[in-house]
Length: 417
Image (tube, rainbow, N blue to C red; front, side, top):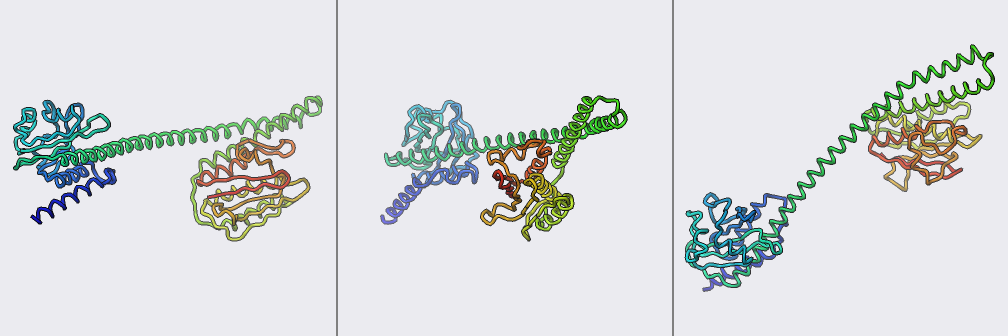
């Protein structure tokens, strides 16, 4: 008696534990069939049944998705009409129990398939999603007649509900995986298309810029020859037009050179190393001072700034930023440039700032666009390619650059690598 009570208490605890489980808590970690097989085992234990079979209803056919206590080889993986007692469960959308399965005319045909499975008593509960039946959880006894109590049937309905949640979660998970996979493939395909388009654009830009240089040089040379050899015969008004033509051609040639430089940057691969940026900046500053000996800039470099970057590209970047500062120095003053870190922002690798004419903050993003200029050409000659090249170099490193400035105060470039 005590042993029986102990067994019943153990089964009650098993039932409560099973009902407290969170279906789908291990979704995605293993196949759904393994999850449902474990569920079927616990259903057998909780209801003291010999078998538990879980089937999914698809197009009026019952597909085997989980079982316990029976050799799967004797079960039909796909049951079609007539569905017998399963049809009654689907139509009623309620749990049904049979004390003697073979005494029920509706159940006879259903339970005689397969013949190798011995069945005496049966209880089945629909797996419901709203009002839709998506499957059936059935329990069976193979030896003794069994009277399933109302409590048994309520427990079976609850367990069928858990199996439903587990199955739907898995199906939703698989759908989400398919969507993610499709999105990944689309993103990858689109990325490859963009990369090809960028490569084609860079190649086109390089070709156009390269091929245009020769006729531009010819225009400039012919203008010079015309002025030198026939200058005395040319009217003064015509000379003005020829000179304008030569100036425009030279400016266009300078722009072509800038485009070529920008295109070359796009074609270069990045070979990053851990480097001392301060030493490189000091070397570049010497070059810049020599190039502007008439009014040499003053360049202060904070020692031992270390970054991981391509040294060749960093040299180009620093030279462009230094030249930019020299070009936009205040009238009659030497450019004052500093290369330093930013203690207030550890994400910034280094800062290059000057005390030149500065710019209005709302135009900061335009600074890095090719040929975009915030000043008049006759006041500050140039093409606007320098800062575009700086931005291209930073992009190739996967970093970021931002600019802050104020009119009459100067400009500051914050670079993160």
